Length: 201
Image 1 (cartoon, helix red, strand yellow):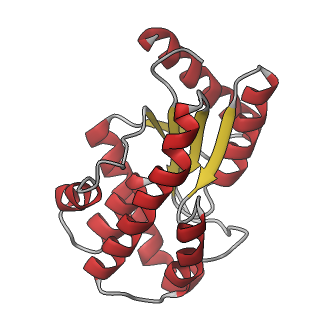
Image 2: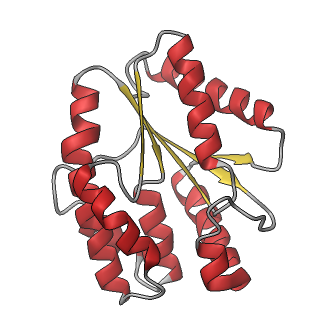
Image 3: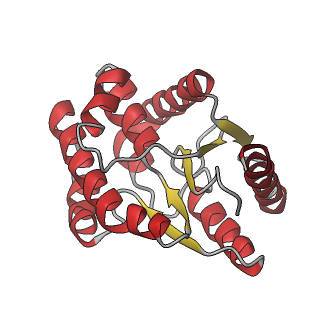
């Protein structure tokens, strides 16, 4: 992979197929000879994985408490997993990252997005991704873990979807229709990764 696209993040509502596409894209890149590390949030390192169940099992935390827990998790994820992989010359693909905090803890929980961004960047360990891919759905569908949709309901799901769409326009994220066939989605994502690498290389 040429310089410019080393850290790629997949974002989207529950049920959008992020995890499936992370696995497919990672496998395809490895077959092409690219050294890739796939990771996830919440999680991605020992400390963050220990917080994952606590975070996902909470029905409702104070918005700032939730933002700070996620920020602490992300700092360690970057420090112990993402940065070392990039230093080894590997490409990193993450299933969720800072964009999720901007939506869930920011837009949906009523905290200014810029405040969430600044909170996360209080530590110099936190990196901005080279490419953010938004898998966009028009309507909810059941995800395998049935987490947020099951716990908080349809109105919450749509608030998250609209938050993602707002940020995608604001920051120029690559948005793809998650209703398409998985093979088509994978090819579109790979095309964007290689096109952007070519332009920035």
